[in-house]
Length: 352
Image (cartoon, rainbow, N blue to C red):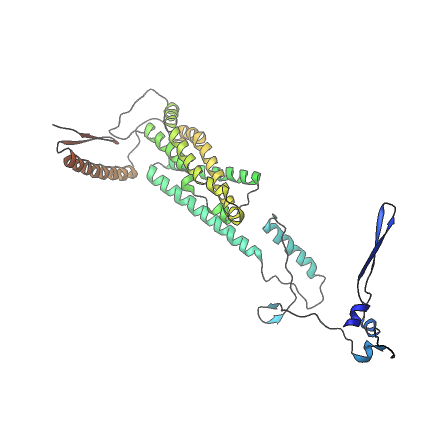
């Protein structure tokens, strides 16, 4: 061992200055084949030199083995891993790798083949399919509920049209700010939150254009677009505050750092982009579409959703009257009067 170390050492030397450059000096071990090792002498004092070939057999060996790559627990194979650069598109990288593997396969010897046993494209496709399914099912459920409770097909679709437009707005901002679309970012979208502002505006417009039986009809001379403008202006503050409160909820997520920030910041950014798009649409697009497609000012025909809501309101009125009367009898010990008019309920407590 000592002879091998002495006869195959890399040794550093000084340096030589040559103009503006400096040349560093070093010696390198030059053993390159078994015969070079066999020719190393084992020096012993006052005796003839003994070479390594006299005391040992030099052969080509193997490095210490720490494991093996086995394919499906059947046979040992040679494997490789393709590393993706940070920030690259995984789908594009997988497609490019598959194309290059086909080219390499043509140059391999007969009987040797390249086979991908861990394909990331399957995971990517499954994630995309999950996102698509969630978005589609969520949109359909929201549309159904809107049409059911608004009682007007056109009104329901006007509100539902905010969903794809808000998604388009969000995708544009995601592309501008470099936010990737994945299961975490897109899967967190809540269409109920997105259409919240639009529902407020459209419902106010519906009750302005089509007052319920028993409700007073005002401003018969105003055009439908003027009624829509009045209703939208009246509900503007409610829409702004509702959307602002939802956005504020996501602000703490933007302060996350480390792994938590990398995981959840794209989600918060995507939701914020979609809510901003829905916010602008509810203030501009929704009033315009309501004025164009919700029809002229006339009596809206009775629909079964109206009867359902009327029944729910009647039950609510009776429950409120019972609670209010119990409160009046228990505290004032006097007369309690409940008067219901339209959608408003007046509770009067007093003596006599």
